[in-house]
Image (cartoon, rainbow, N blue to C red; front, side, top):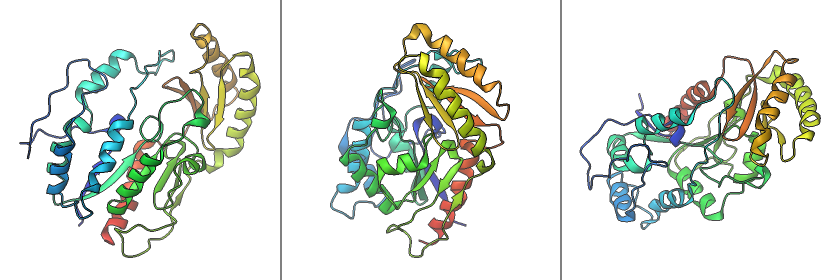
Length: 307
């Protein structure tokens, strides 16, 4: 059986047991610090990647790590006003238990030595900066080249709450897996990267297809009802909806949330959650990012076995 190691976005990172570092010891995160401290030595990354025997292209393999490190923006905290939303204290505790992958990179690469690796990436705030207008969250050319470089060596997937087609239009790399709408719209590569010797069967997973009519109906109602809240933007992600309030006056955030709740009272098949300055409306089904990752792991495992 193929051994599989996973490098995942910060918000989904599973802590790695402490291991003796191969080169240097990273500074421990300071209590309450956000974001967690990053390793600053590019030489350290180069040495670590040398251990993984990824330096066959003249030292350019580590450039993707430096690009991600340089482009990762400081997360902006959002005031929770839904009962199930995480508070700032919850977020601080999360950061203490699950530190940044970049601050523990030497430990992760040591643990991954001799294993196969799959990459899971978020889009907003990871591959692109957080911006006021979600339609303007463009990734830089250098970041695109970094992700393209990753995909040459590892099966790579982008998991996002965005519409899959929208994220693909931003990224424009056909060799990746894309999981949009929080994993409810998954499609495999249409172009096969270097690390696989055989083309796998095309992948398409859309477990919430039956909800499309009600999602579209709710979208039309929300667009009309939120017009009275300046700065609010409703985004149709196909299998889920987003009500962005980043540009809304904080004084009327609660009013906007109440209006959205009122609309959803007529749509019992949909549920409401809160993200970073965004309200998310999703189908009430037993499918989330965790199950999407399980599905992707299975598919990526098949792809790795063809290596």
